[in-house]
Image 1 (cartoon, rainbow, N blue to C red):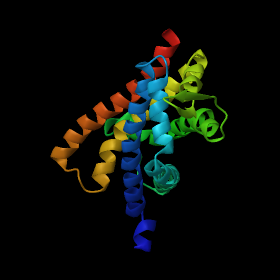
Image 2: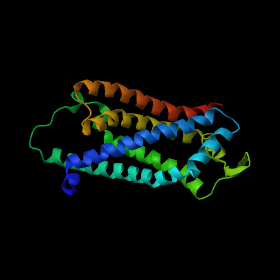
Image 3: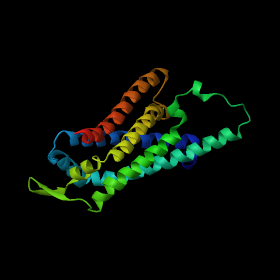
Image 4: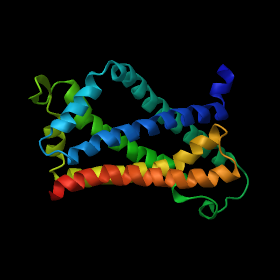
Length: 223
């Protein structure tokens, strides 16, 4: 087992499992964030954010989620380095990959770096500030909680921050467009028929994530 996990196939399997886990998290996270636009008082979003932050189940999932991000990033970097070294050592003539693969699949490492930068920005401005208590509090229904709504919307009122956020969301969508079906293929759930279906589902999911995360800062910038 140890030897398998160190092999190229083993690394790809770990990448796929961690990727599918993060794909599920993104959908939950987007659903929560969309609540920002449906209640200008902030009570709906603050209540949901407080539930997610205080729920015992989420406290258990939080370190698992962090581990999932690190595993996915590290193994992705290792596989990319190994692939580049293998291509560099090959004596065969190079061919035009643009004719046999999509742009996103050829540039996953760059998209991954963009997503990583986007994640760092997100953690620094939201997650860490909430964890360190660097945010105001509100009382909703007799319950004291962080005023996460004001923290988020105040940042979305800054145009250049919104531009960076939207670019990050688009990069995330492109990353997912390839990563979705690729993850299923690696774990053996993608034949010729299902690959076409997963391509469609993955494309739709990538659009939902990219548009969903992009529309929120745009909404607060306009309204």
